Length: 277
Image (cartoon, rainbow, N blue to C red; front, top):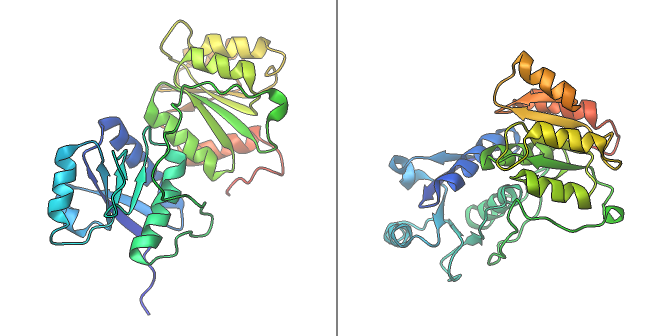
């Protein structure tokens, strides 16, 4: 009996450059899962296990139809204008990275006969997409309505970094809410409670990460909440500024997995948090 396949290859057709970066980061982070994914180049398109195609790119859709004349290619379409029978799955825009891996798992199960949900997986729907909220949107949720699961706020103007941190938190059963501007972050902090905050040093707009950190540490609700600064470089000057602002520690981007896990263990000391060893 042949062993079950554990790594599946993906061909990307069309898509925005920012979406390609998200998918690339997602596949890299999937390496620690029972089932992982790898993006291949156009040269290896014929051998890819499935394709992810831009549903709004006429050229990409024409290439898909042409390729499917000689081979039955499993396909997930991003933001299709409709959902014809020949599409195996679809996702909406903006791409929600935290749901994408489980959608890949279900697609593999549906089209390639694999177990659709490997250990530690999470169910997802392969029905036509419902648009997801943008990362900088503000959800007006009263503090009293927060669930028991640990929550984190991730503030960074880089979609790639937000995705990386969000996925790493999800692997540790921590619910992440993301913001890409200082204004969106402050609005979220005014309406929701978070157990930990990941905060980029440099942000667009009128406030930087240090100013937000000082504001957080002065607030009654989040005064004792750990604030972890995200920085592209670790210099003594940055650390002094962070210390004066009241931050608890630093993580250098791109965030290294073992360091991230160690920091999370330190600042979320509670038995209900499932931290992978």
